[in-house]
Length: 391
Image (cartoon, rainbow, N blue to C red):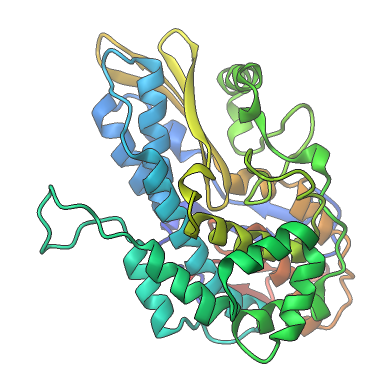
């Protein structure tokens, strides 16, 4: 299968997963720190667009995070972006719909990507850009009623608020009940198949949940480490350990959301999509920025794959970037010794190919890397199967 991925730049790199191999041998990455290389020396006004094009799969989040970091570094030269919360809400919901509608059918049951006509309408409604017929002063249409209709009739087969209330009460038990009850159709069938065929992994530890943005002092510590350790961007650790990040590590998450198995993380993604679509969804995702030194700003946004961090140092005289450091969710979750690597090591390398693929694909669907991946047999000299990371 072709390694090309629609929407992913060839310079984004790729992952190689080797089930049964102990960390750090079971997960290798060709991702490089392009932000540090291409960001240094560029004019301040050009950096957000450059980051958006460099990380084009999550361009909205990178653009906003870059703008926020610049405004924290030199507030007299760069104004903070506006409407960050609503744009982040729309784009995060849009990404969840894409992954559920396009990736899950292929990864969880190895079928062709599919998305209902109503789902396509939901995608169109969520897109924040005005249409050519609109003037710059016209408001972007409210997408949430259309999305709620799609959620009820196509995704859940029940009112979104009822599904979310049951998830908040019973978590993975509710996900299992719902998927079995509706296993004859749609996304529920995918979730049910994934539970039967691949959910043998240990739950995540709440102690390793990535939440440095919970305390300003923690953000300062992260900023100091990013400034002093250039390699931290590609192999990040938090408080001396690998960490995990995603829709289950939000600051707004209710107590008790963890621990979750990788299979239950599928439910966490559905739950977040519902939270964003329902009334009050604009308050769910957190974002912000602080100054972490002279002319140095650190910004964070909670986006679809987890916590994104940008730290930028600038020269106010030349109005150019001195240093640009980016840590993306993929770098945390797919650390060579991180959560995915630990679970890859637990997979029996002698499993039949189809069974191994189901277990690996469940991990990928749950932790959702922003780059393509290959799967290699432990004793093989070359990859046996290529899997496209995103549609």
